[in-house]
Length: 187
Image (cartoon, rainbow, N blue to C red; front, side):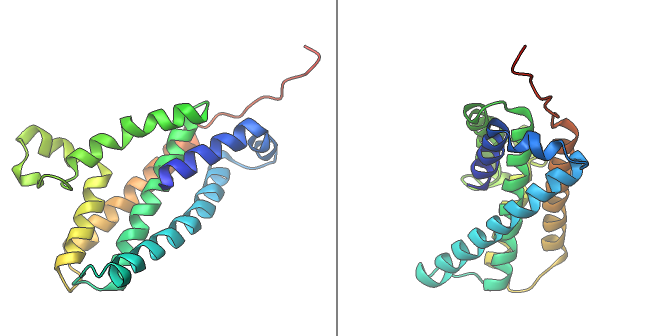
């Protein structure tokens, strides 16, 4: 959800001129994108906490690692969606294009992350491809938390890889975002 919310909202602000006004300030593209990332991350964190609480307490899903660790994994996943949304919005020109990025960026990850078929049961080529997809590590982290009641080095590895992808998507998004020139209405 955060992918869609972030990319569409950012593009809408670009269309409405808010982005152009912000980019006219003495503000680096990185600072601009980090401001957006922080704002959307707060929304993502609230969404992740609420979803986790509903999952554990209302739906009764057992998580051996506990509520706190489940919230950590959910927030990491939400931050990943936010970063991917900001990344996609740097390339899309319209909301429709941002929505079109979703199948290209997310669906292969959903199919290969081990959510539907265990990664060790996939063909070697698909398993190797999944090693390069961020959603794989998000899924692995949540699976580990659901099964294990203590934090391990594998948990830390997955979390650090997710955070590395978040930073990478934000940096690439900042490098590729375009400053829009103001168009003179008399031309």
